[in-house]
Amino acid sequence: MTDMEYTRLGDTGLEVSRFCLGCMNFGSDQEWMMNDREASIDLIHRALDLGINFLDTANVYSRGESEEIVGEAIEGRNRDELVIATKVYGEMGDYPNGQGLSRKHILDQVEGSLERLGTEYIDLYQIHRWDENTPIEETLDALSYLVDTGKMRYVGASTMTAYQFTKALYTSDVEGYERFACMQPEYNAVDRHEEANLLPVCEGEGIGVIPWSPLAGGFLTGKYDRDGDVEEGLRADSDEYTRGRFREENWQVLDEIRSIADEKDASPAQVSLAWLLHKPVVDSPIIGPRSVEHLEENVAALDVSLSPEELERIEAPKTPRWPAPEKD
Image (cartoon, rainbow, N blue to C red):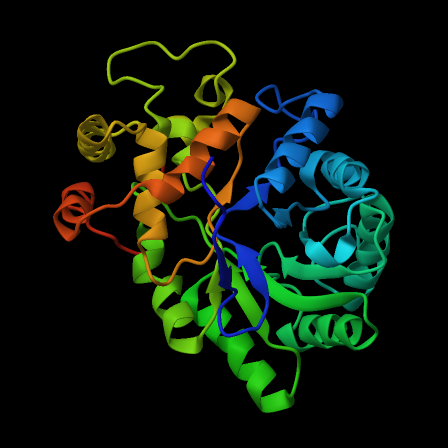
């Protein structure tokens, strides 16, 4: 089995595995999730055994169930060897202050996440989205307080405009707040809009990049066909966002990925992940396998090497632009 590789998260000294295990599948909120607590824990244990030290979850994933599963899976493990990440912003209750990035909501929610994860601190605490209703100074002040009190080690962000992220970094630099260490953007071979938005900011500011949906919701695994029906139980069967990727230019990207995979005796998923790993700005793609077999297949992408010509073949059908086109 492939030996895990490690890298520093952006300009920090934090060492993370080249793949991060995404934990959104560990829960029962949607049909396409694993809906099996024991199997989820087994999958996390296998990921740790393969050398993955970086786990990413969020309080809103199945309303805390994902965090509980992660907490159960890491119980008894050497906490110093793990990098545990979670997020705050989404709705956790249908009441005033039940969501967002106010000081109250952040300080309330971190306690719940710590309890569910069964840990005394969170390595990476991320704002899940930008909050239009809360001054960024208030959010950064709350996050800085949590770093100062030892409840978290680093702060990160996810999915926003380059202007918003630059404003947050500038505010931290000028006011002395804790600075975002990493960004979690949607990024894969068919969703490349962040090349025209966040990624240049990350590259210029030394921000770690941990892409979500590196396989485009399963589209880049090759399990869907242009003219075929979607199998019941697959994500695109119930998720319109994933089906929104079924457009001609994306099928052309997948055609090239399948062709390269055949040439290399690899899978489309491995070639797609290798494409991301070849991007200097990317630190650790967040993979979301639902089986140990898929996990092992994903990790084996570390052994897939792509030439500049092969990278160009994959990229040629797409022209990155911002805002991202609507998925229909």
